[in-house]
Amino acid sequence: MKAFLPLIALFILSSCSNSNYTKLELVYAQEKYQEVPDYSNLQYWAAHPEKNDPSDSVPAPLKASYTPSANADVFFVHPTTYLDSTKPFGWSASFNDYKTNLKTDYPTLLNQASVFNEAGRIFAPRYRQAHIKSYTPNNKVDTGYAMAAFELAYQDVKKSFEYYMEHYNNGKPIIIASHSQGSTHTIRLLKEFFDGKPLSKKLVVAYVVGIPVNPAIYTSLKACETPNATGCICSWRTFHEGYETQFVKKEKFTAIVTNPLSWSAAITNVDRFENKGAVLYDFNKITPYVAGAINHKGVLWTAKPHFFGSFLYKTEDYHIADYNFYYLSVRKNVAERVNSYLTAGNEFTH
Image (cartoon, rainbow, N blue to C red; front, side, top):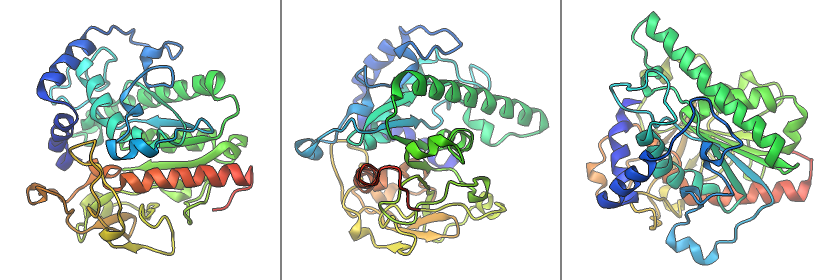
């Protein structure tokens, strides 16, 4: 997890100039929250159809063809943005931590949630996320604190989803999307609300990205095997080709890995020249041919990414770019699955 953290600053600065970033900090610092979330208040939604937020953004080259749909809803659970090494609010983020809220919106909603804004209305709750160190506790005491922080975070996510279902869904098809810590909670959310449940009939697809998904925990939900399959799970974690991490080696299962260029279980190796568009440091630029995609033992491999300045890109863990590298491909795929769902009704293929 630690390898990608320094890159977050680069993505923030790519999204807005230093002066604009300072202005945004001042705006966010003026917001006041209660410590217990109230999801009837739009303030507790990082993204919501009734507010203007970064998830509404569209890269400039795509604006001419942008035709948003309200046929489905997207429930997006954001990754860890509580990164301050001093843990100023303990193991759980505070809603009044304006720096964390700013990181949630820029760049996370901008670079990840915006992928889905043509497919449906986006709902992304703020929640009392666990600190990044919760993934690497040092001892039993810290492990206890970390587990409590993850539980608190999940309860917020669950509460927001229940509020969404009761007040906003109105029977619409649902796309679940997440990254990193958001996926940690989404794995559980899918089990509790969709797996073997009537609500599974409303699931278009779940993009559970950046965290290993053990297929054995589900009884009815399966990995997506074709580009237009619905009611299923897509998941991947991106690393440099040949790189094998110790934490992956220790996993006692083979995680779901979806190829985000072929979207087919039968096509597991796709060259970067088939990748029509990534979004990197400049959100308003679509860069083709950046990264290929190779399925390998529960993870996704790619050769060193190709873009201007990539010689400076030294990490072999591409976690932060799981969506960015395949931005256009994901955008097209979710549209295809929504169309498949609407065409087939409640008939699902996996």
